[in-house]
Amino acid sequence: MLRAVLLDVGGTLWPDQLTPHVDPDPCLQQLRRLLPEVDPGRALATLREEIQCGLAEADRTGTAVQDMHALVRRALRALGICPSGLDTTALRRAVCAPAVPGVQLFPGAAELLRCLRAYRLRCVVVSNVQVRGAVEYWRDFIDLGIAHLVDVVVTSLDVGFRKPHPAFFEAALREAGCAPAACVMVGNSEANDVRPAIALGMRAIRVAIEEPPPAASAAHAIATSLEAVLGCVQQWMAPAPDPRAPTN
Image (cartoon, rainbow, N blue to C red):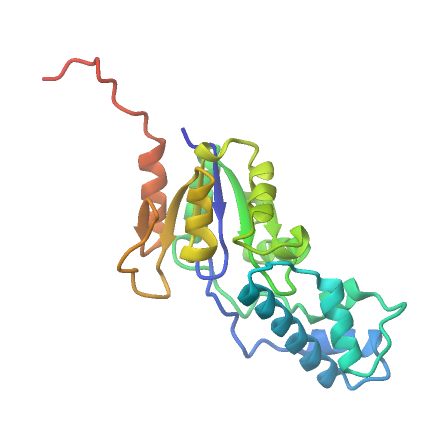
């Protein structure tokens, strides 16, 4: 019997890339206040570039470590600023633009979340991120009108490790509050979602909304829509037939 769903975000609930024309002005205003001696546009570009490069390196080398304080300090040094005494958390948050209005949920996302709540399945959002921690996700979910349908948010920023690192999934399972066998992982990445979940004993649904369905997958199901994800969950929640029951 399922008790929890681990739900990826980018490429699963909404597009993998946020709309690039999101107005950066709120970010610039905050950086102007935090780093008054630096052009805010240059500060924003440098922070984003250094953070992206550092995370890409962690993914490429397989360390999967996400030390945001170190990455922000690295960006400050690239700007010629001594990081000592500066609030790296505030700077990281300044770089994180709200998802709304630059993003829209995929069709069926809200209905999927409503059904999970109706079925009393614990909904754990799990996401590899750059600068968007759980606090920022809750802000986005409030803006999108779905915050009341999510139980907890687990991000690589808050855990300190990125998927597929075991520490990330251990943190997610603690929040799910159940054994792996009672969990299903829903995500669009074979390497980051499907394989590590199955290795821990979970079921997995590979989402293929933004890309064609894979020719092969270790997932228990492949879904090209969130309506199909819901169908899989409903099927797995149904009690198994009693082999002792009489047949007609």
